[in-house]
Image (tube, rainbow, N blue to C red; front, side, top):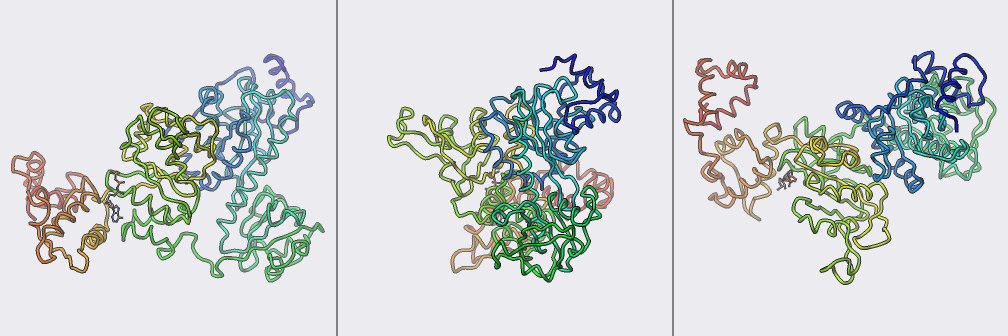
Length: 625
Ligand SMILES: Nc1ncnc2c1ncn2[C@@H]1O[C@H](COP(=O)(O)OP(=O)(O)OP(=O)(O)O)[C@@H](O)[C@H]1O
């Protein structure tokens, strides 16, 4: 191993133009660090973790990618688990937006920058696998003293680029070791693994995007064509290239004598520019023909085995599901409200994916209702199991969730018991009020999520489980993380995507929700209707308890009303009681209205509210309109 001083000297010699035995990718990166980024090898810098706010922005921008990459990442992590590797997904700015590592090393990993939020751009961190991979666009290993900065020389990092279907770099996948054998060749298998995972993630991304196009997959040997293709391109109905994986870009570039680094020159051209065929010949390459007959000749004379997958719909359509394409359980969440419609579209896209989703919203907004709808719209055949973490006593929650082995503790069932996590195998586990989960159990839950195994209390062997995790909290988890009451790593693991339910008072489909609840409380075979004044009164209410409060109000009114017609008098008492004249809120609003001579628009302007809100407050406070 080189001493730090020798390491700095070597970089300075290379910077001055001396030859080097290092890989060309390393030498080029060192030169960029010195000449372009003006870094000094003698000036060691600690790993840099971006502030929480910036991390949230980076994660939001990468949400789609994280969702698609997640199952690939977890598959890769299972291959390398137990070998001390850490897995990072960095965006194209080099910021780590997803992370899988053994929680017991968290402190060391964070210090070394192998952690969520670590920025690994070359300009910031010097030569490193993520940064060099972003600059060069190719898979590589930066091993120990290949790093530019002395701080990072204990690490061995291997990274592969993930490209978008338009050929632009989307992200970098990296696996790193805190300490590794001296030989760089020890990381060859790591290089193969990250490259294969990046290829599969690109393929999944292309397949998801190109549902309405032809997809042409390639392999050099017929045996792997249908099971693990090396590359793919998508082709529209007119026979033009629409998208490609990185391998696809390389095949196209080689076939037409072009450059894969200029994807804009590869996309949009007809298939026949690259191969001795066009779109009308694609049906000849579908699964109907034996694999070894599906040989395709490229314009550069090379041949490849190909598999054409037909478009799912002949007519090109928007990639967003239309309202009638949203699964029925998710459609039942709301009516014509812009925030709900956007949520339904996002939920429809996320429902069939195995990503964990965090559901946020005030109390009673329907978080559990949404979790159930996501499960029903997911296509999963296993059960839906809901757990309210706040309702189970802290002493019981561990064995409830994880189960226990026979005789694990006093009072344990003699034959042992399956926990709720295992009970949800093949289906969905909904963890309500996850913010109330004790910190020790958060660590155990994290392991279940990362390793897809559960170890019952008192058991020695873990058992494999496949569960889709949905969680919810009416508390702001980000704030709990900042206060040290919720583990940051678990927070990020649970919210690969977030769905936030709007409060009822902000929903424009209030009448739609109300009508559904009236329907729910209609007696069997009977009628239930709402008088216009009662509806008006409900519309003017502030709904701190959201849909649950409305549901309760309707259940009381349905029981009290005469002849199936709900009048104001049937609503719970607090609805028809105006605020007393001494209520300071009433007095304040009255004063503003007096100043504006009763002009509500003017009062709204002065209060910085919109007119409907002022009208609602007036109604609620008994300032009749
Ligand atoms: N879209 C909806 N249509 C009809 N009823 C709904 C809808 N959403 C929620 N509800 C009803 O509102 C009540 C509260 O819903 P839910 O328990 O899902 O809320 P929550 O946000 O999980 O509440 P908490 O924060 O208290 O756990 C339930 O009775 C549920 O049936």
